[in-house]
Image 1 (cartoon, rainbow, N blue to C red):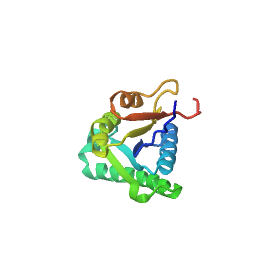
Image 2 (image 1 turned 180 degrees about the vertical axis):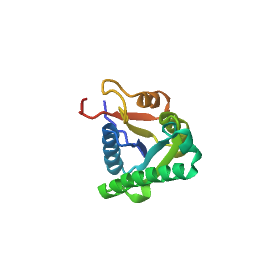
Image 3 (image 1 turned 60 degrees about the vertical axis):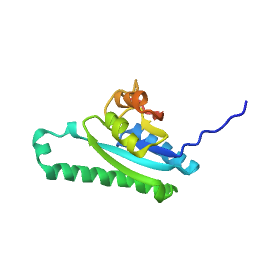
Image 4 (image 1 turned 135 degrees about the horizontal axis):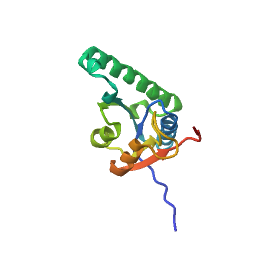
Length: 154
């Protein structure tokens, strides 16, 4: 039997400030560099975290989204600093109540990755089980998914 390494040409990684998401980012950046792949870096502005008064204030929503874009730009710069070709990096900021659904139903069809890399547990959740967002993505993404878990324990 011959082993044939799988090379992915378009990698999408979901980022937030959770330890597992940071580990997923590291993995995706390294794989993109080694394989010469395109790299999409996505974060979803979660509108369910915004109260009714904030949502009515368009400046608040615009400022919050711009701050998220600036944070994602830091990930882009880190990937460039690591050696990923800047021409092969796409910054994606989406918006919605359910990040997993937005990624599966909007981001993936538009970016068309052949691999999605995500953290096991998001900013909130138990370290004992795969997070609900990650679970939804594995079941519904339609692409290969690598789920990264850190060694950290609560």
